[in-house]
Image (tube, rainbow, N blue to C red; front, side, top):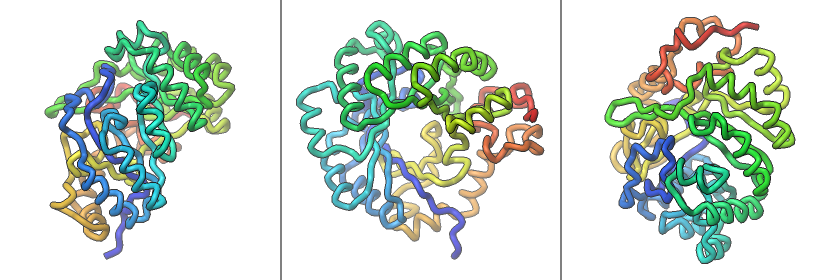
Length: 345
């Protein structure tokens, strides 16, 4: 069999518990269940499967992965195997002295830090936590240790706070800032989108703040676009491309990634945690059986449905390959024919 789909990237959802309660997070709809965590045995099996698949870099996500009790043991294993791992974290536990000292002995290869708030009042309001000083310390420790940037998920709380968040991150030691945009998730078949900024308002706000963001970051700024590119002025998009300040088209649209939930179920997207495709130990248990599973006609049709054109305006679009129509999940909330203007060169 000739396999048309072979993932080049992977995500392991190692737990669902979290020490923050960010209102816009997709994990909120999972209930932050403390018992929903990947067993160490399953994690090891999946890491070995991914290594056999030729994947050399895996992302560890949650919940909050630093709360997973097996994190450091898994880090030891992946280091032995030569597999690089990125931990996606809010950095709060890095502000705990004992954990930080232990973590530094068996760290991940890199870290993806999501900044939540720039002061104590906002952290309480947005994430339900009173531990801003600990979070700030953890952020500074991680940024110094990994010499990296941070990510911000733009949502309704950030419409007037984005520049403050950027300044806080840079002052804390961030080398760069990546901004993505809050999208919808599904819970029991219902689209949940309370904290998404309406697309046209989002464009207006970002254009308003852009020059200041460039100044704050020294140009070390990237937008992870899950919005249709035709919503933006074409000259702005071309400027972002020229300055290397844009990424677009996610792994779902490229079919290049694979996500495992805490029990080994395969997810097409974090936002679709209620819609697993299959499960390790049932539909597959090896590299060959995983590839056979992913290349089934039924799976291909599911991806095709998710990635169908959101609007007929996209059919003749000159830059659709760079755009993909934005995040497909948004169209469970918005009418694409009313939102998408069509690309104007």
